Image (cartoon, rainbow, N blue to C red; front, top):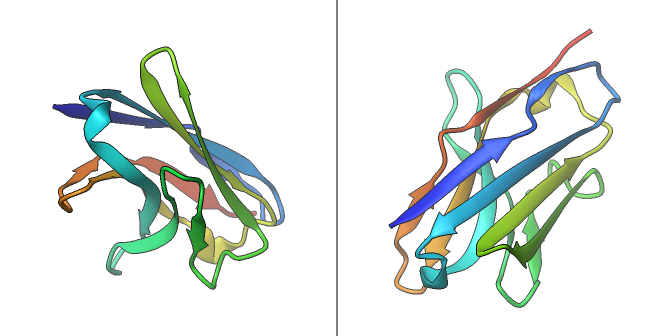
Length: 118
């Protein structure tokens, strides 16, 4: 099994920054692409950014130039970070970490809330 634990969410003013962290543990050898998704109230869950095991990244158009995804392996865990700058109220959502296996099975964390408000 794989466990994903997110942290780093919170309340921030527009224009501010937050850094989300995700720690993947367990059978992490199964995991390839790691990503961040978000879901705002009344909306569908959407991809924010992902990063392949080789480091290739992909971003939603709405966050390009503002968010940066990165990953590393440390202490038997895969760590994934999402650096979020120039935050906007429309970035407010529950952010989920996702890990994808080679056969397309996805693992999810419990989510961390990001609220952008003055």
